[in-house]
Amino acid sequence: MRGLLSHRALSSVLGLLGLVAAFVLTTALPARAGENVFIEVTPNSVQAGSRVSLRAGCDNNNDRQAQVTSDAFGRVTLRSNNGFLTGSVTVPGNKAPGDYPVNLDCANGATASTMLTVLNMSQPSKGPATGGGGTATGGRGAGSLLLVGGLVAVAVVAGVGARRKTGGRV
Image (cartoon, rainbow, N blue to C red; front, side):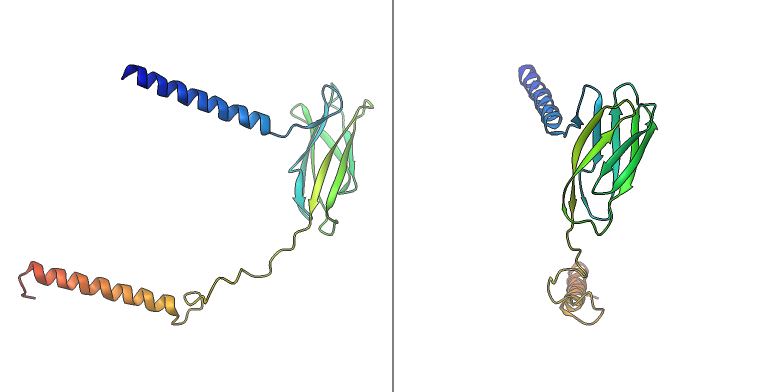
């Protein structure tokens, strides 16, 4: 029993380590130009009209503002925030779908870039056609009739059960 328990515990720990390793390997890394020069766009794929967050590093110059430019949203100034340069911007709603470079220009002359994918999926104007919708209209559709019929069936079964319990005297 003790060997089986240890085997299960070891298997659980190894499985957990495997999941952590898979997460680390599949997590997107920021685009890097130098050791500590990078720009991240979160999320990196957005619907036109959505807001994106920008986070960057300019080596040891993260206490000075930096400029980010892209045809997807224009120019944004990043400001120092907890050791990084951060900002946010909204991609215009009429922006054509496609991949847009996002370029970082640091005050110390360092640069980095990454890509932003703009999507332009049409939004449905109403829900999908999924059937008659008898219960949704408020009328006496098939759903309402089934509900009433089910309640009647439950009442009949309860009445028969009560009658049997009292020996036929109700």
